[in-house]
Length: 235
Image 1 (tube, rainbow, N blue to C red):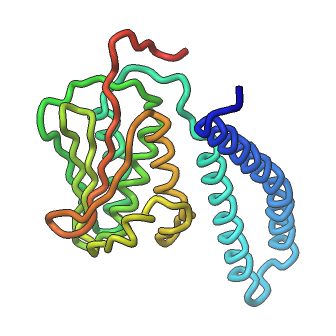
Image 2 (tube, rainbow, N blue to C red):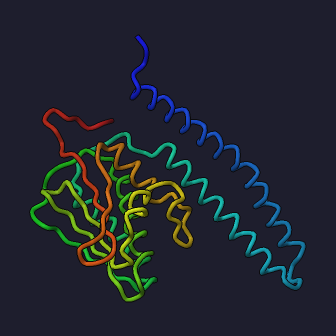
Image 3 (spheres, one colour):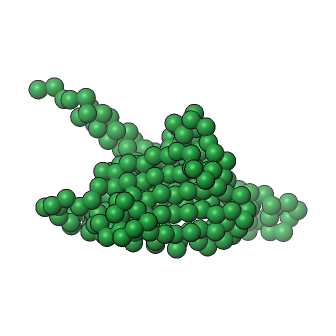
């Protein structure tokens, strides 16, 4: 019996993921060598004119490439196995706490709230999902003007999370491609943050969508399925 279109798509996606992981591993070896060479150059050049600035630039670019490789590896193979019972409210609250110091540095406040009793359980890899929500919050902060705010709300019984900013309201052509790899690249980020977040959410059986906020700006909505009867934790 020939494979179904869905099976062929999954096989192709798995092959692309394996290829990306191989590329990441192969690229990290020469980057380690380059890092060691920069250390040697620092010893040899000492306090020569322009040397500190040159070396700082080289290290910064090396760090940027290493960050991109880390994001590529996470995009190719996000950690979503070994899921356990938890609540979206607990994960979102932790993500907000983790991102508040970064938002404070950007002079952006983060507000967190529960729309209603949010005790519905979900089956999730808490660390991976928390990182995904942190990426969404960081994106909202990067869109916000200094002195602005980002609101994170969990509602619909605890299976939805909304991240809302007060930045410029995006047009439909941007909303359609918002989570594509490298389409959105805030300063200091690889351009994979939203793509990774969407991939993690979808691998949890959920959905990520975006629309203009009624208050102006962008609203990103994350929805996850509740725990079904008979669902078991993964060990």
